[in-house]
Amino acid sequence: MKRRSFLKSAAIAGAGTLILPRMRLFGADAPSNKLNIALIGTWGRGEAHFSALASENVVALCDVDEKHLAFGAEKFPKARQYTDWRLCLDQKGLDAVVCCSTDHTHAFVANWAMNRGLHVYCEKPLGNTIEEVRLVRENYLKNKQKLATQVGTQRHAFENFNRVKELVRDGAIGELQSVCAWGDRQLRRPGYLPAEGNPPTTLHYDLWLGPAPLHPYNPGYFSGGPGANCLQWNMYWDFGNGQVGDMGSHTMDLAWNAIDASWPISAEAKGEPFNPEVSPVRLETHFEHPANAWRPAIRVSWYQGGAMPDSPAPYVDLKKIGHGVMFEGTKGDLIADFTSRILLPYGKEADLSYYKPRAKAAMIPTMNGFQQEWFAACKGNLKTSCDFDYNGVMMEQMLLGLVAYRIGKKIGYDGATGRVTDSPEANELLKRPYRAGWTLNG
Image (tube, rainbow, N blue to C red; front, side):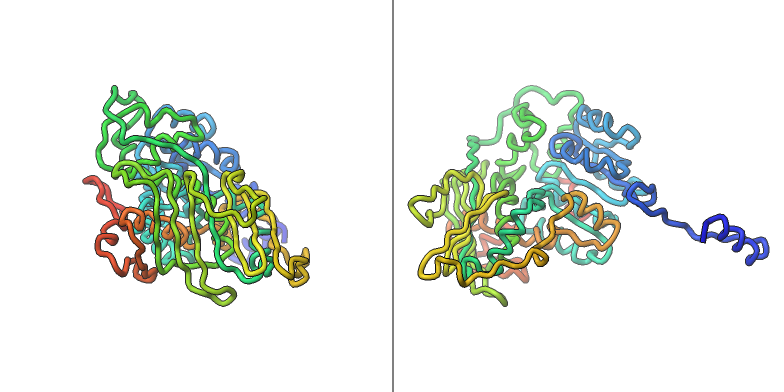
């Protein structure tokens, strides 16, 4: 029925009293279909979201640097502006939040946003401690019937992630035995930077520190470019976890997507000598995962900063792959980076006669944009590829490796309770204290 006819009929039937329900307009560009979003962090990773966010209603901007806030306002001039994300989250009429703040505030922003009934897209890492990641994940699971979440491991949208998963699940390397991921980035720092100068008038330095302990201002923390300034501070324990939380989040995702794993039952690690101020550059961590319905128990490993797994063949130089994964099976190996893959079958069945590729119609469909998947989830079925459950357990494993590294021995772990089973000292490292006035669950 056309709207004009409907109005006429309704007026007649209601004897002059017309009550109209709120009518939703359909179509991607309909105002009622657009999310009211707050963007927290308007430079660096925040800028990387500008294009995708242009399809929605960005109604709030927040950044601790007023210069960066003005930069965001050039793209979204109608949005209200804040320097404190806590105030931003209380703006009326918000539907969702995109969090591009510093690593040591990710869990805070995500948790506070969900407590206010907001959908959340949070850049990686989801948290800096196991306590943070578990709290955010548990909050999401309590609200998963009404909130959509996504962690910013945007490489997950590459088609290669699907092809790698299919090869592993369909038996191209036989029965899966182990998997490892690695990254070769090496950024060394001797320790926290000394006091130098004063913050520029546009920078609210105390808000930048947030829940982290007080450290004197030094311009070196802010000397990087817009896409990489995190590399100036995320290796310090009070601000981040170095490559474990940075490229480790991206690269382990390529492995995690295929292996269908939950929490590990143990963790062990070795690396360069412990520095109480700076996370390690060279490090390797190893985890034991129990069997599931389609594979046996497996070993999962992470290597960084020059530490590398052994090559499966002398003619394969894994060091030429800056960030990659290797799956080892009973009938071959699969090596991949984010966009390509190599299958190395071996043994008597190296002809791959045992393996039947799935039909094209049965292949995992391509994602139509990583942010777009989250937008659609907020408006519809709430399902995303890298929600706080999937990514939360993966990040918990990665952080457990750092705990094992700091303890200096193999530790057992009970994922159901989130506790190390054989080291009270290790359990103390699952959390961190916060500055007065900052709470994780506000």
